View (cartoon, rainbow, N blue to C red):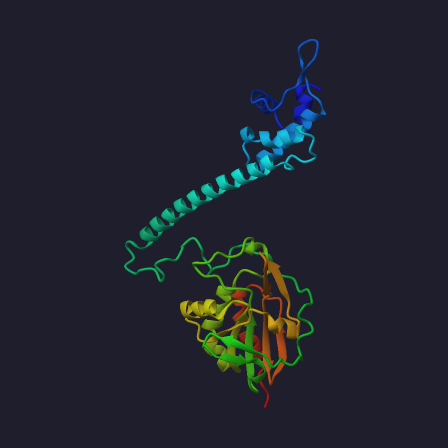
Length: 320
């Protein structure tokens, strides 16, 4: 076949094909008239170079993979030299990432300094990365759908389960008292020194734990006035992590830590997996006399949820 057909079938330009030849990666045959003659092996080689380039491996460093094919292996990465090529590419990316991270840190520091140079008020946390904003919600977040995973909860008794609170003592969920208790369950709370899991914004209902907590903070006294005897946040994060959030956000209520997700097993609460973590899906329980009286699920947007709970309490006053 001629060069144009090879380029079309392999998804590259004729200029790219000529460049591969100049590097000795492609060695076409010659017809009697001197024209290049490409075969199916050349197509495979060209496609492999293109695929490796898509992974970030420079064309000039694809030879170990092509030699692996030439040796008769089915896959270009079946050989030790190919694996070494992957490792070299990963090392290069790591160095680039570290370099970019260092440049980013310098830029953030300059932004940090410039933003507060003439304000007269220092930032709340000197080490906080201004590029990570856990307080606001990005536009276009996916809306969670009601999958029925919480439909069974109203009317269930709360198990006799003790969870450690940020106050330092275990809280017995089965001994909350005869009044109403609001327990909002959330996946995880972000903080300035910890990155959110990859793809967090694309998971329906995941983003927004900090705005939700601030909403319950800001409505806390109103919730008590509307008939709530207590408010708790609950996640699978460790208590020390939660305690930092409570102190930084000045939350007037405790967070409960359930790293083993014991409440999920006892009540069948919905969870999801991401980045090798199993986390609670966002929901809120209204517990009264040891029984789940009402469930909010799914929850969106989380920054308005405390107001939704407040309205429900006002619309459903306790009788007797």
